[in-house]
Length: 259
Image (tube, helix red, strand yellow):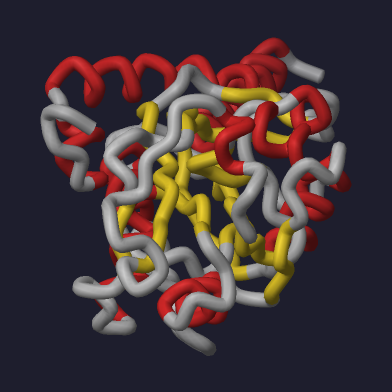
């Protein structure tokens, strides 16, 4: 082989490597996140792309300016969603509370926001506004619970010890309808989700929220430990920090100054 031919081969190899590296750096990785219908945060319609809801808007605000990544939202019942994350079939989910069992198979971003869950009651059942001081004050009441639903440590403990006997139903709407007619006494539900249901059912005069929140929790983005998402999480944390500093996260999710 002549020196001239050797130089050509080496030049071709170098150009090939450069071309491959340039192509690889421009590749966009699709990050799949599963969710279910959760208005007003996520609106899922059959056979349609998931594009509506305040959390959907927030996710795109985060990911659209994130170089090298593309967001894909997939609909799945909640238990199946968590199983798919555990098995690595989807990358992760969002607006999640951090719990020890979840930390076994998920890595979490920095918290995006802290929001409130309220105690909802019917004005037909309570002449005066519902009030409480300690969690044990809730034990005399029939608590409506959606199947598979969890709350905070204190309320979950009262239920597991049978100090509170939950009335289990299959949907949040069913729960609020029972509350409206007095078949149950109280419902613990996220402030915005509860208000959206009350508005949808036109029960604003019948169902109210107690002034004292049931609890407040931080919400995160979370990712399956089956894949290495460390680079993505670092980028997300920086982006989340920017949006939190500007107040954009609370604005998009509809939080007011006191919530």
